[in-house]
Length: 82
Image: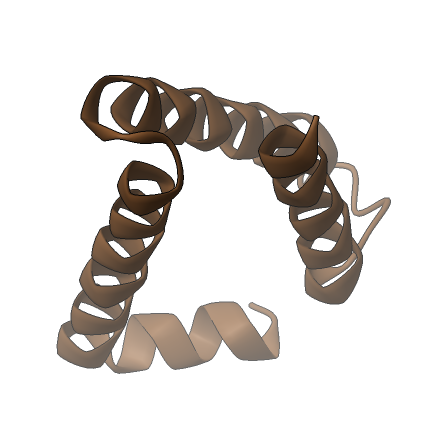
């Protein structure tokens, strides 16, 4: 296991709490930016994009966590401003 995966596996409660806080923060940010309907739809679309990106790229080890994070941040910025 890599460092991030090993740390998440070793600290399950902290990982779940961190994931929940990030999930709520992202959902709240989308709702504040676009309103309830469009914010929820945008959040779900972004979540599906990240899930698809992780499933496609992670098994092949093309990119590490920082690379995938940078791509995701760019996608979110494009989604917000376009």
